Image (tube, rainbow, N blue to C red):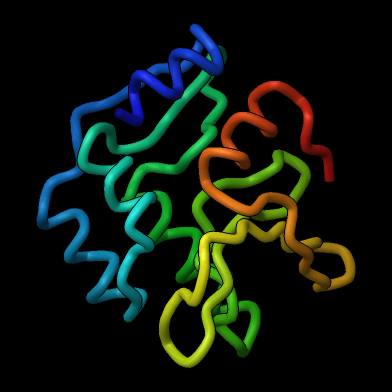
Length: 137
């Protein structure tokens, strides 16, 4: 389902082997959060989504853990689960409330002023908007 959707958005999407159960368990272990269903389903098909020239639309599970741990070391509050970046220092992610992800909204975190705002109401909307340039930060 996800690969078909992604290719329908852009033929430049490239995929890797699916994430393993160990990859997903590492997210739970290191970040203390369950992945939202849509992102978990995407990882079951491909461990990240990439474009031409190495652009990463959705990080691999390994990159997700690394980037979130780094972010949490710099900021005292873990209010977002990041899964992608804008290439300018801003990051995309899901809101974390009371240790879980309450909805499908996708946020952008501004690295310059530490603000965050909703930019898409779902992972599908984010992916389409980001790849096609309909979302800007």
